[in-house]
Image 1 (cartoon, rainbow, N blue to C red):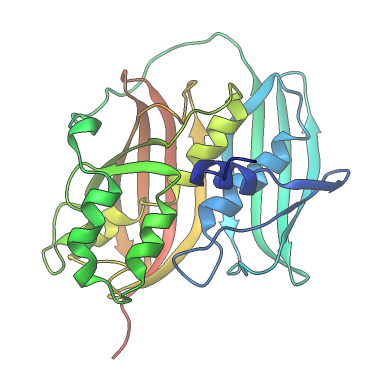
Image 2 (cartoon, rainbow, N blue to C red):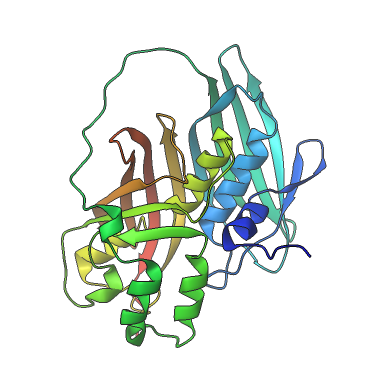
Amino acid sequence: MNEPLTPLDDLLTVLDPEQIERDIFRGTSRPSLVPRVFGGQVAAQALVAAGRTVPEDRLPHSLHSYFLRPGDPEVPIVYSVDRIRDGRSFTTRRVVAVQHGRPIFHLSASFQTYEEGLEHQEPMPAAPDPLSLPTAAEMLPRHAHRFADPQLLDRLLDARAAVDLRYADEPPFAKVGEPREAKSQVWFRTNGKLADDPLLHICLATYVSDMTLLDSVLLAHGRGGWAVGDVVGASLDHAMWFHRPFRADEWLLYDQESPSASGGRALARGRIFTESGALAVSVIQEGLVRVPRG
């Protein structure tokens, strides 16, 4: 008898789009907290599709993407990869994700062979030990009374089942109406070991990078977020730079802040550090953040 799939197995299956033609891939979606495809999933699937057309010795060093339309979680997503350039050290790919005959997402990614170079980085900020922090299963039920939908607790727990994500401080929905500093930290790692495939670890970090990045925006205004229903929003664009090797099945600190919000849009930036202090990834995202009318 086959063992049932774990939540991580299920996520890895979703992040493994099927190749249906040269440079064309098809992906399915996991259930989302909102009635559209989770942005981190689309970005990760697109990066996997791009990576499948690149020599194995070249890994992503940056990606830049735009979320164009909400994705339909009930319909497969078709990813078309355009081989923009294959140079001696760098490879560039462009990916368009399509549903219902229209593009919903656009990604450009650059890959590089490893080489030696100058070395410096920002120091890792202070953060509590991840094992001293509550898990999602311990923390989320304490705040379920604040959620707009009684069924949201189960959906949140399901969304966090594959990834162990722990807040260093109270999440936005824990202190609604209490503005705080526009900074947030979470520790994360997958709930299970991953294969020794560097692209897989990069794609898992891409998936997680969209989960909490706009939290710092909400904290600045004392808003609880999408779970509470006091804001509506969506990711508009997303950029990442991959600096150093890391494993997504080992603890990573996601240090996040928001320098600005105006015009219905908010900017957030994040840094992902390994537990040993290496700066592994930089992230910047602009999101649509609106206060519901009435």
